[in-house]
Amino acid sequence: MAGPEAPLDVALSWAEKKGLPVYMGEFGADDVGDPRSRAVWTKTTRVAAGPRGFGGAYCDDGGRFQTLDRKTHVSVPHLQAARLA
Image (cartoon, rainbow, N blue to C red):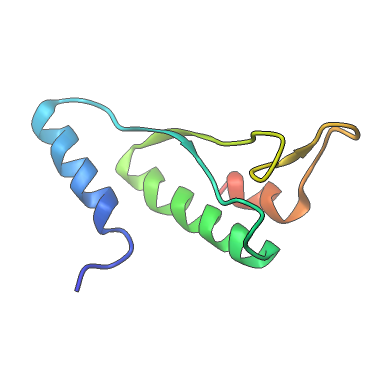
């Protein structure tokens, strides 16, 4: 059975064959999940992507994927460290 990082390995293999970098576009975990799960998913994804050389942009749509409070300009605490992993 393939592990949770298998899709990243598929992308890496394809990119290496094509001589292209991988950019993960906008990725993130919406607020339907509990704060701890969102932080764990975010950190796990960044930690797995980093050694593979993947770039990316964490999604903040100001709604369900919000990571920054637009009024206070303060990051959502449980995502702050996870995004920077």
